[in-house]
Every structure is written in C-alpha cells, then in structure tokens.
Length: 257
Length: 232
Image (cartoon, rainbow over all chains, first blue to last red; front, side):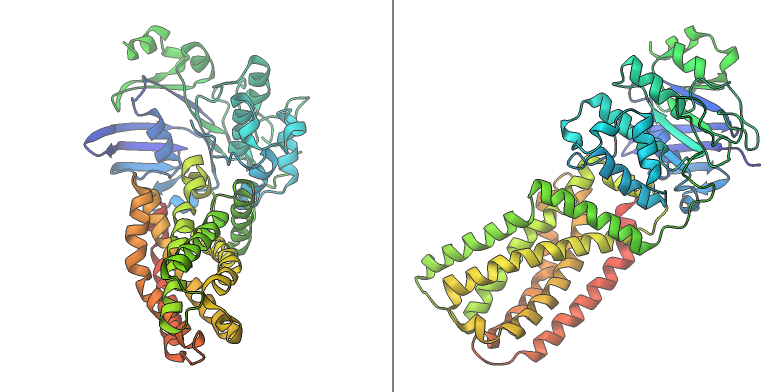
C-alpha cells in the first residue's frame, strides 16, 4: 500500500518568498507526523498543500497514493482539515454549518447530531456562531473536520482556544491518546475496525482505514507524546526529521531560537 | 456504531447546489447585506432622476435608459457581495475540500444572484412606474418581464464570473465593478433597446434575441473557467 504522504522536493512560493523549500519525507499510513517550527516556517502551507488547497510549484506530492495536483479530485473527501480559520459561517448555527458540510460530503445528518452530542454543544447547536466563544467555535470546527471520518487528518494547533474539559472531548475524536504507530490495515489508531464508539467518549473513525495525522504544534511535550515522526521546519526548509522516540525535546526548542 | 457508511455516496451536483443555495439564502436573510441595499439604491436613484429631470413621466428610449442603467448599477452592488462571506469566513476552502463538482458553486451563486435581482426588480420596477414611467409599464408588463428575465440571466452569468475573479484580489470592491461594467454593456444595450418600444407601445424582438445569445455565450464561458477561478 502506498504511504499516506510522500513528498519529494516540495517547493511552494508566495511571490518571491519560499514558504516551503525542497521538503521531502514519507509518512506511513496510520502514523502521526507532528510538525514544529516558528511562525512563518511553512507549517500551515504544508497542510494546505496536502489538503489540495494549494498547488505545489516544484517537486512531487502524493497523498493517499494520489499525485497532486493532478489527482486532487481523488483526495478530496478523504482529508479533514482543521486550520487556523474554522471554515464556518458566523451567521449560521453549528447545526446549520455541519449540515451544509454533511450534504457536501454525502454524510447522513445523524452524524451531525452524534458529533454535537460528543462535543457537548448540542444544546447550543442552533445559536449563530458569531455569539459563541472561540473555544466553542473551535469544537464546531473539529466536528466539521472529522464529520466524514477522513482517513487523513490535517490539524493546525487543534487544541487552540480549548479549556481542559474541551480538550478531553476533542482529543479522542482526532485520534489523540491512542498507541503511537498503531496503523495497519483496518486498524487505525483507534484500534478495532476504527468505526466503533467505545465508552462515553466518541473516538476517531476512518471508514475502516488506518487514521493518519499531520499535526502542527508549538507544544513539544504534547506533540512528542502524539508523534510517530517529528518534522522541524525553519524558513520553509527541513531542519529536523526523526522518529519521535529518538527526538530530544531540546532539539525542538532549537528550532525556535 | 458510526452513522457514516464505509463508502460514502457520490454527491450529485443538484444536491450540492441545493445545499449551497440554502446556505447563501440563509446568510442573506440574517445579514440583509445584498438585496435590500440593491433595492434601496435603485429607489434612491429613481427619486434623484425624478427631481433632476423634473418630469413625472418618461417614455421610450429615455425611460428604458434610466431603468437599465439604474438596475445595472444596483446589480453591481449584489455582484460585489456575492462571495464576501465565503472569502472572509473560509467557505470557499470548505467547499473545495468536498468531493463535489466545482460547477455546483457556479450554479448556486448564479441562482443566488438571480434571487437578489428578482427582489431588486420587485421593488425597483413598481418604484420606476410610480416615479418616472407612469402607466407605460403596466401596458406591456409581460414583455418587460421577458426582457428582465433575459437580462437577469446575463447579469447572473457575468456577475458570478467577475465576483469569483475579484474576490481573490485585495481591491475586490474596485476590481468587481471595473470588470463587470464593460462586460455588462451589451446586456444594458440589449435590454434598453428591447424595453424602449415596450415603454412606448412598440416592439423590440431583435434585441431580445441579442440578449438571449449574450446570456448563452457568457453562461458557457462562466462554466468553462469557473474551476480555475476558485482554485489556487
């Protein structure tokens, strides 16, 4: 089976500035890549390229076995993106926003109610987002990203604006707290068939495929706890690429100096 | 168990258009940013013409010119607002992540703009009749509705194209009208020439044909290039 992500010399520029400069790596299915780096290092650009929202300008990019940008159509619908922006309409309620995305992804509307309950926002599900706190909107954004049970999750600081109670609701939905490297066919980080709802917390589901994650983080402790592979970016270039087990937290700190 | 099946069904364009259209109309109903502004602009302009021309009744070419220039500028306001919520709140990215035909957004936005134009004309045409055209509008209402419908199709096709182009630029409020007005000139000419005889009890069938042809050409152009405008 092709790896979840394969990059060879990925380069992406904004005008004259190179946001990503010759990035190469391979990420196996079912594994978690955590990306560290200071602001402007290229982390968000990397996620947007993998999500098919930005075209690579040089190099080779394969996501879930499909080359980008040529086969972007085959990747869409298999990726869940949680970026800095929630990608939600402020004038619509959480329920209306999620129903819109459910229809665009062909997902049954019961899934919307499942997620609203799992994230404990069902009682505020009909209020326009503009009146909700940033933490609540972040929970809705998480629900949007995992609504269609994508096998590849792209998460940019997924715990931003969340209090500890909300983190405990969100974490299992995005595959956190599972054994690292728990991939394998049909296994996923959630174990079993990847579709079950175990206990009171809803868990990440991937329609039977192993869950692969790419997470941008500034928190070395949490990031290393979730990572199988660590990528450090500085000015768009690879400054660190190693197995999480072999990575010293100090090496991550060096990226920010 | 999850309510999401292992293999998700293909989402049809009609279903996607319906979902996007519903979203657009809900957002507009809650913000009232586009259609009411367009209608208010048109009525205000007719009031200005009423006093500036110092006439209670216009007919023929002058009546048609005043009507269509006003409707055209009012429509530009709607064109400028068409993608604003999507661009500012990430709706375009959210849509691009979904496995649906990009043409669904073109159709949804064109239908949304058509809805704005219908609301505009429901307010503007009676105001025009009251302030400037007298009884002339009532005599040939059926013909005028046909001209309005054909012109609206052209404005919707060109408007979506221009709005999608402008929304990715920093000066979108300026770029939108600058691109739209030259492209809409043939619509304005065709609509004005077709309505002038109606407002003076004559016929304008040739100009209706020109309007219909222009609608078709720009409808096809919009469909052909829309994917490239939305994506990176």
